[in-house]
Image 1 (cartoon, rainbow, N blue to C red):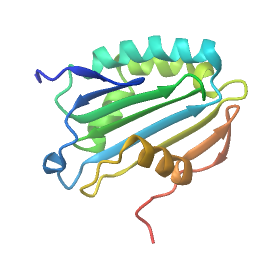
Image 2 (image 1 turned 30 degrees about the horizontal axis):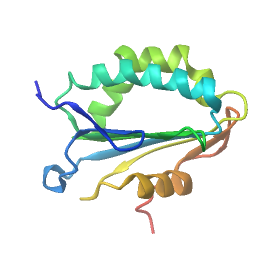
Image 3 (image 1 turned 180 degrees about the vertical axis):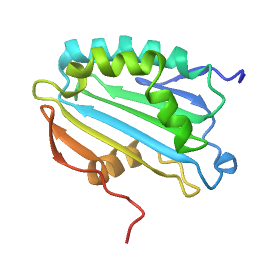
Image 4 (image 1 turned 90 degrees about the vertical axis):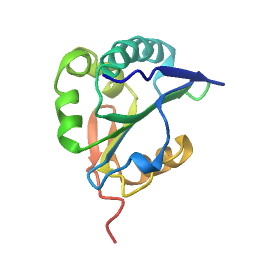
Length: 159
């Protein structure tokens, strides 16, 4: 098991692992989630939920890099995880704290006026910054407004 730890950075941002491109194999997968217009209560619930998910993540050696960022003033939260491959991501998503979070806290990320974006795609040797990840997920990710899906995800590498 990995000895990596979550590292707190200036501002509301934490990372797990290193943004090391040499660790990216041909099957590496980037997953980005972003929620906007969360409001203070939803942001607080999201922070608590993320603590449980973060503790599940440190038990996995298949996570190459992860980053969680948020902005209270602008009321958004974003996660990015880089996986060795898609199978590992699917297994993590459907088990443990993450599966429970999806089941019981769906309303936090998809209810009310919340706008949500979700995208998984092949890393192709790149790990985006927080800003790049936001741009990528908002342009190509599945988009839901108040829980209603408005647009499916698209491959950012497609021509």
